[in-house]
Image (cartoon, rainbow, N blue to C red; front, side):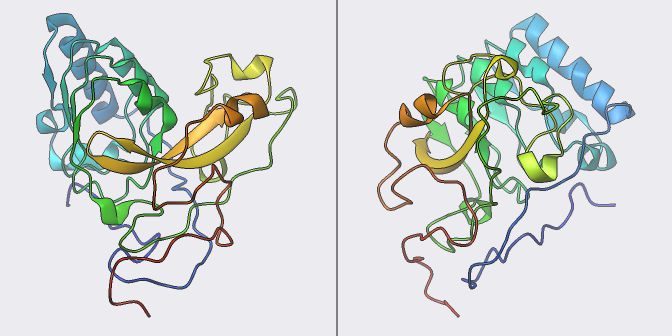
Length: 248
């Protein structure tokens, strides 16, 4: 068995007409031995204060295939300067990556099911270098694949179980805090938007979980050459023309 699955969310090599794209709906198996080994590796890295973290290198190909996200405990990795996730089977990164404040280099290259990143990644102020498979990203300049449509904004989350969400709908199985002001989502509303921003050496599609329209308004201006405002995705979003020549 290979260490990762083939992704068919969108064609990563040719421009296609806009169509509806959905988040990967897989949930992490937190009872698996692979997950528990990953938790151990995070604790070991936090304890010894290492500056480079390569968790997948410590797992077998079958174990790597089972890992589709990282644990929230990566927030403990405050000394890590290089996070290496080359060739992963990941479909999402948790917002707790924003606590990795020493991060300078981020390498999820050839993680072809990783189409977006949490807005909290912008909290890694020292991040200067990234190596990302840009063809795999929503809204990338080569292919311009569409972004998944987001749910309408909610002024209150009282009728929403934010700790038991459907990741195919919300992009995560739990949303705990506002990605802009860090206010607990349970005390406010939930307004999701997409924004494309420079992070490291790439422009990345970032999912913002904001607690209010005011926090959405506080977002920075998107990168030049991308959708010029925060948006809620879907095939109707007008993107600049793709750079790739083999448009059909």
